[in-house]
Image (tube, rainbow, N blue to C red; front, side, top):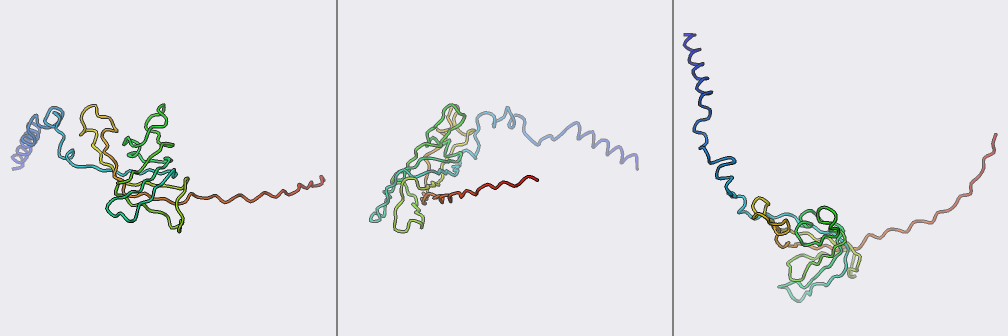
Length: 195
């Protein structure tokens, strides 16, 4: 009996080595030469992908929304960019300020959030009854639709893969005012007697 069990175990091991994973995958449908390699984009390319769009800067000019019209926003905000996330820089909305450097250098570009966009304009409570002035801090937030690189047609530029940003919020607050430094008072130096 012991010999018969060993023979059966040996025959089973030989069968596994001789016919590995037979019938698990059909030949030619997967991998580098299969349907996936022949331009099949897959289900994931049919979905709409959005990413965060954030731009920060200093206020150049602003036109407030007319509260009498509820159906459309007339507010426009123009700012000088001091910071922007990756998707804001690559979307083509911000002009490259230094073509010699790799990537889009957005710092110093001018960006305008146009009237007609359905976004929330938040003014800081620090204004009270006042209005924003040039130099105040501005943050623009929204979403931007993007086509993944592998889903785009060959030769499509990065900026062409991005859709127009959907700005959802523009926040404006007064610029941080630095407190003036206290004047230094000079203390006379005293010489210590040498011993």
